Image (cartoon, rainbow, N blue to C red):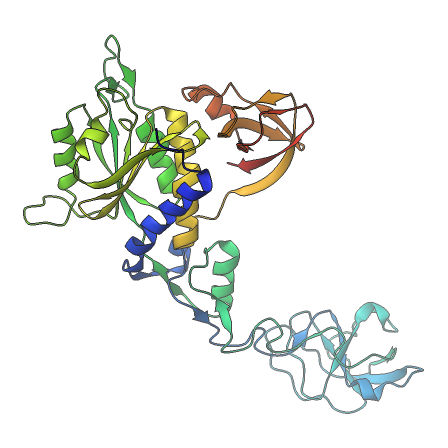
Amino acid sequence: MSVPRSVAAHRGAVMELLRSQTAGKGAEELPLLQALGRALAVDQHAPLSLPPFANSQMDGFAVASADIPEAGAQLRVAPPVPAGAEPQPLERGFAVPIMTGAMMPDGADAVVPVEKAVPATFPAPGDRNAVVRLPPVTAGTFVRDAGSDIAEGALALAAGTHLGPAQLGLLAALGLTSVKVRKPLQVLLVTTGDEVVEPGAALGAGKIYDSNGTLLEASMRQAGLAVVRTGISDDDPAALREALLKHVPRPGATREPVDLFVTTGGVSKGAYEVVRQAMAGEDVDFLPVAMQPGGPQGIGRFQGIPFLGFPGNPVSCLVSFEMFLRPALSAVLGTPQPRQAQRARLAAPLTSPEGKHQVRRGSVAEGIVRMEGGPGSHLVHALARSNALVQIPGDVTELPEGAEVEVWML
């Protein structure tokens, strides 16, 4: 009997499996908003500085700090500088009304907020005789220097960066309208089993509706994968092989090649494990992982293309994706973003099998996690009520109420 592989070791094996496949995927140029959630393909350097010019951080008066002694000074008021305008150079002995974000005049090196002026208001437009008394100010006060955010030519975003709203906002601020992103992996998803029928079909005796297809395809699409489905494969190994071979690059192939095969079901040690039988002669291993649920796993290459075989129970399927494939995609492709891990306290005591990393489903609110359903891998309703995966390490067999655990927010 083989020794179960650790969760960390299997996750590492999935990463290595994907790494070579993703290296040659290439890039595509997309408009910024279409790149949301994708990973940057190349290092992006700043084509200009941000800010591109020195500007005011406050509504106030732009001054030369040397014009104001420690006792303060009364200065004449120059024409105002609104945001978006190019100001005239500052004359000595003058203060310039300036708005937040407006360009600093040449000769000005500080801004005095309007509320610190006497009077604490801007003069009426066109008042050529206005004066204002201002307190002393240090050079650089309330001034955003050109390039203080990022200098022209500096690295703005590294290749592999996940492009969320903040990253796309930076690219827009740099004047870019499109960006090079990594092409998504295309995965063929196959659910298996004679007992499984498509939702909406008649449900005969001994049959169940396929939830794995919807569950995994939704998870994969959310993670940025391009998903191809074959429909449900029965328990005929030859038919399953033929369905997979249609997506392998070879003479006579009738479908577009894919980058990854993922199957559900048929990976245990039963008499009718169709995936195991279909993979005979391929570079694929079927092995136990020290995890519950989701212990039986398949990994390797079918006709040279990466292959992952997940268990057939719905919760086992999702846990396998979340524990192995999704983190590998994050590490190798830069997208999706890793699940947020945090600590929460147990609302009730729990037990866990020795030597197995248990992944329970739970609901987290105000720092407390409550289990949803038991450890069974068929509890889809409990899964749907959950917002977190609760991680119980293999060396932990029981925890009291109030104990801290790691949770991954879904």
